[in-house]
Length: 372
Picture 1 (cartoon, helix red, strand yellow):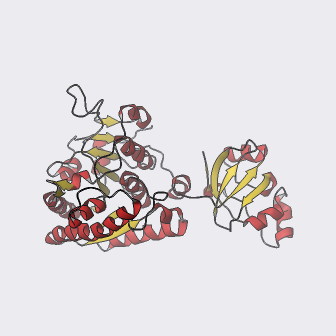
Picture 2 (tube, rainbow, N blue to C red):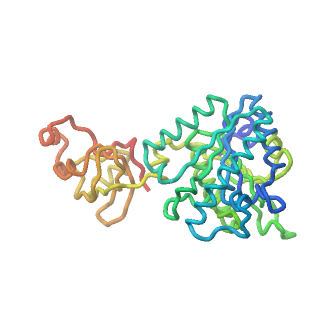
């Protein structure tokens, strides 16, 4: 990973900041930690006066629902989880609104699902909505929409949701608040375990991480590092920090708390990030060796290199690119429907206009293509 700016400079220049709060951090004495939310509101109020845009990715809908309904344990089935979450979302937002209003802050609830963000149009709509909330000086509070989510489409952990939101709105910093408080060389409670204060190679750091599941949470340190890879690949630094008094202000004032993960110097485009991590192909284009070589050299996909078309897709749908060995080598946005491509596969570019009766364009432009 290429590191350019220092930790201090990266934090100092951060204006748009995403804060991820897990379920465990919201729990205190077997209930919602209102003191923590009150403190968070006061810290954000201070930061807003310094012209910083703050977004919160908050877990806790299921936890809040369990407390509101007086249940003895977390719901087990997806239907129970959806129902409890429906109660919890309203209750949790009521608590956020109560304490943020005390600081003269307006909040806005944004519920997202991965199924929604897989569609390019809805991805852009989500981006525009969040940015408009920021224009209105509103603090967006974002959560996965557990009420309509099912096991196959949920993010699975709000660490990943926070990372995708950071990329979505071009954040300058992602802060993940964790009960562990950072990455340690062993279990945080072990005597000889040491905090890793700075991380420049996430792959190397992963050997210290373990997956874990708490009573109300779904992730662990591994998920936080995997999510951090998404953010750092877009030049967004990440801090994994503990739940402490005034922790956000302390971090932004340069105090070295938790684990700081350096961003990559070269920033991925937002569209290519969406293609790589979120988009779901509607069909498949099988290409020959010449086309595969051309794509790896940074060129666009042309009809001449196409051997076969599979699936039903329209113009502007995402398609998978497969080589002759049967390996998926990338994804891209098609400029033709599957019916049109069946007519022009294998043809030279000059013959396409005659067959289709319209101006030729690349099948997949290099700007709309990612290779694995």
